[in-house]
Length: 270
Image (cartoon, rainbow, N blue to C red; front, side):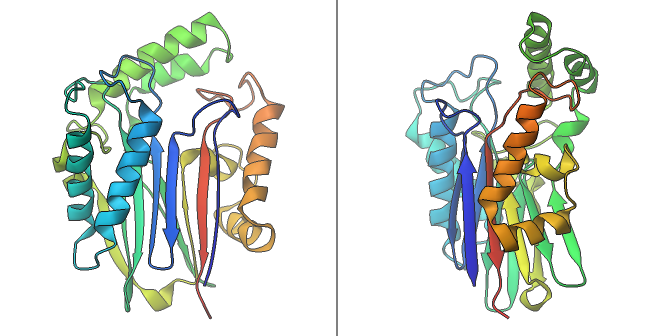
């Protein structure tokens, strides 16, 4: 088995709000949600993602614990670490989560939020991304996309978009992510596939997925081949190159020029 990983913050002088851990039997990747409003928390998104990631990894390392139960317990554990913060705030720190766990017979996975998992063999490829957040605040998203990054109009539109997103976060008809309420795990995508049906897998945040989903630079299988032949750092290098080629987001409308980007690639033994 080969495990390769890379993670970069959006800027060298900013905290990375992604988080990952990787071992032969368990991979966990988190993408902390960008805060554009008051969070009611003194710790910040990077702290939250790191605390939740460590707790998920600890809970899910026990194969007898179902992945939703592991995530639910982890959410509780982290909530108990900062009880003096306003965990009922609409903007309380949150994160998208993906977990991939190996058992003797299956690969089990959980996805909550827009962290993706790619599972592939020579003849088959599955892309698991919870994109429900993309279906919320659509009018506000379209407005924000009209303005260049760095403009006052863009900044104001992003605040309006964030408020609309937060109104739909962890609400029926909206989207679901880990925050302070463990009951959200009932909305996760959870499945197990026979281990012999997967030869390569990738867990990646939406910043890394930009190479395929936003820039259309390669296909998903092309990304897998790039990872196999040149490694995850080359994927992130290409993402940054494309972001820098369109600094104000006129060619590829987006909320920020660069995003935190993380991916973990696992090649199964043959």
